[in-house]
Length: 55
Image (cartoon, rainbow, N blue to C red):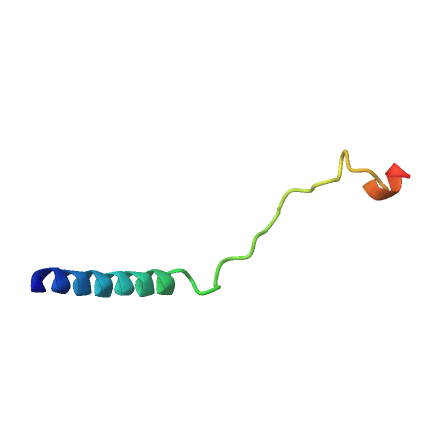
């Protein structure tokens, strides 16, 4: 019974350590900004809103 308890405690400690390591390696908000190099246009979008087109 003691062996199961020790194994459970070890699994919890390893799980917490892995969680902390994953959170620290995540970048903490220092991700590169999203850039769009291509020109885009609203090809098929209407010039008026959909709610005004109903009436």
